[in-house]
Figure 1 (cartoon, rainbow, N blue to C red):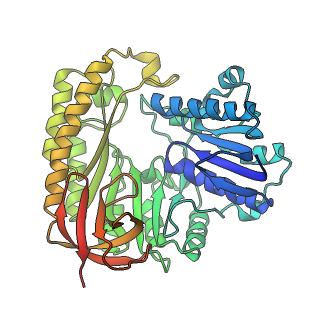
Figure 2: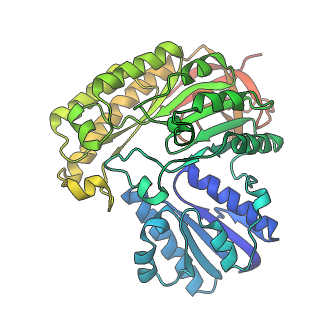
Length: 432
């Protein structure tokens, strides 16, 4: 056990990662040594930042708590604290079932953890972070919570109503990130396109993106987690006209069948969805759209699923992920619908959908052979430098592999000509 140290383990999404990074800065300000996701957990204090979005994420969080609880019993770590989404929603039940943890905290009770440890919250550095991603990119969270009320989603139950941060606060944090060498900012929120509506009565995400893109040193600005209903159309000219705003939008659509969309409480129709996608592509030529789709929602028929398959073939999304419906306690769908589709059917539909998307993705990648793209170098891995184009978000999208025949610096941009492509990656050479 290492005295005077803290190990933080982050599970779930990039929004949780930002929370952990800010908490790490607080520990450092209190004179503690802190590590993130260590290969071997051995600190005097261990904090697990949990995820509670779907069943698999909840199971992963509980397994990690149990694993660290066993380390505590064995005397290999000291105190064990649990925070984050799962703890926010189920802390009473978890407290009763897992007594090894010394404290259970919600998603936002960071000062409570510090107080329990006999440490002080430093409000003057609340926008400071210890970056755990490669130093040239970072995530920037602009809001908390969600007002949408989708039937399957527990996020509002854990994070509450939508709360936008002030633009000045966000801009201050962005400048701090740039001063630390960050060149690429991944803008995130549970619902990015709602930003500002709770304060100004209408979304002001376009204004915020424009102001962020004006900051010297921001070379790429990427937008994550838009929502299709009431999409702010004034954002599209900003994306089109600003060279440092990536032509990339992550917008979860979930489904295309009107009966399913209605039961999901998505407040959008199939026709409106298609009109939106057509408008986005017209306004921002060359944009790459990433979406997420769900199969197996209660009541989804074979006809509903076939409409979803046809939709994917029709739209040819550049990036797409999918998952099977998982009932989450307390959500609208868990209360009002029966989870009436078997796991076997869900998995079969998921496999069919992803096979279709894989063929589309391969075709889109093949079309890039011979073209040159501005590429940021993320790391050296084996015999290749690994980078990304403006159309690729870290960890989830295809990467560009460049044979390490010459020395390239991570965090630097290069023009790379694509020479070949496979199902998941592009291969290229430096275009001098």
